[in-house]
Length: 110
Length: 116
Image (cartoon, each protein chain N blue to C red):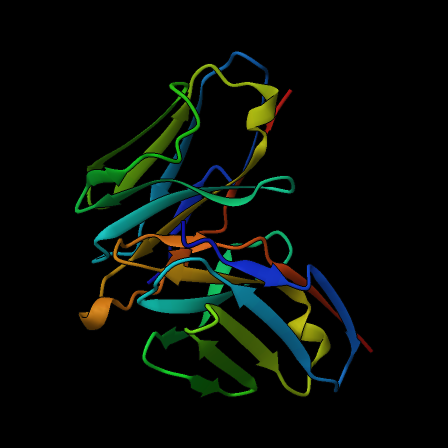
């Protein structure tokens, strides 16, 4: 299985601080994606990083990938209350399906 | 595009009843996925289709679950008979494989199922 496992399970920070979430997976991947899920909603794609990339940016998001350690991190800079959500990593291997981790619940307080 | 459409949004039923969940993927997407999300088990892939053909149903929990995709714009997930442990949020997602194997899955809003 290429299941992603996020760490920590829950994270609480104040608005303006940075939030870092980590993800580990088990086997070789083609790419790794991060998704966000607001309470009661479906998942929304945030960013994709290919297996041959080490770092990628998108707005306040920064994703790193270390294939030697089979791990990825998602950094949200200057967090806002609206960033409160659950964040999932998902790995894609040779098959088309994604295998999601258990998620990190991020709480951003004012 | 309206995105992935799921119906119903909420379903409450009694144990033993048949439940049918519906999904309309984004037009032009070749892949359709059914997921189940619970607090205990997280987000689980149940089955996915490519060009209306089931590719991997290894996540379907048991014979009570079945899924069909009669055409490119419609899929159903059926539970018969339903049991309380089937209570969960069921998501449908669709995607299109881009060059290089990159794909983004677009999720519907989910169907919240409660089996009493």
